[in-house]
Image 1 (tube, helix red, strand yellow):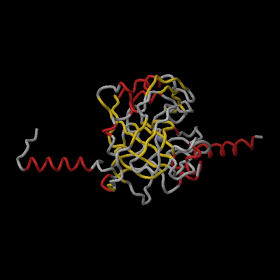
Image 2: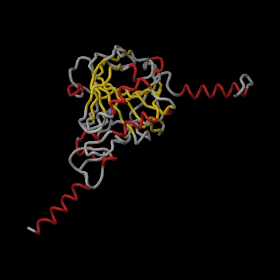
Image 3: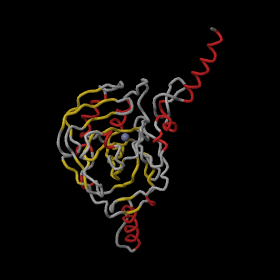
Image 4: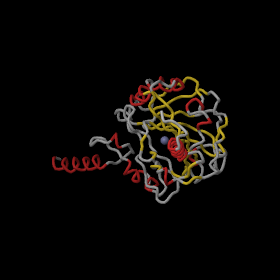
Length: 307
Ligand SMILES: [Zn+2]
């Protein structure tokens, strides 16, 4: 009997410390928690080791300007709906019961919103999945859409262009964002995994910048950022961030992973581009540089006084 104990113990240490079983984020990994960290997600699902994975770091000077990336058409984003917010063990997620759609902006079809969820850091620290020129924002919102003809995400994911995700970054602001109160106040009721609570009525429009501030965006083809990592996602990442106060951002860190640990750092690290191209809409990023350039020239010519 005694002789059996050591090999069993060794075997279990081996399993625990190399990771096996369910997937997890790096922030969850300890030697007494059995889980696969992001670099081992390909053991959970081979697609996670694919060539078109998300998220990525967007190097703005290497993006390609594309005039087909016109402003998106948002339909029914203003409609107020009732739903439930759930702690699914990896994030806070909300199902979308309305038929809200996006089209244009070179999307190959009309896509309807299915759910939204977020990825964040620790207490308002770096936590976005995508990064812009290496900058990681405190949080990232993903509004997941699928082609209008499909009735469920599983089917949509079999189509290489079946899913379109809109990604939005957050920035720390000095005042709180009242439009986020329904979500922030619900978080205290879903601290434990599988916790869910009804959300005060909200619209998708109230969670994102106004339409006129959504013309600058990046586009590339990638994957889901959690296992199965299916490479069926058309990504649209908006340049303009959503402002939240530090207290509002910190409220997300009160959630718990399914192991009871504080839910922080629920982002996947950036993945290799592997030759993929990232496109930018006409109004994205380089405009800011030319504005500075023009101002510099104006100052040099004495046309304008620096203040
Ligand atoms: Zn996500």
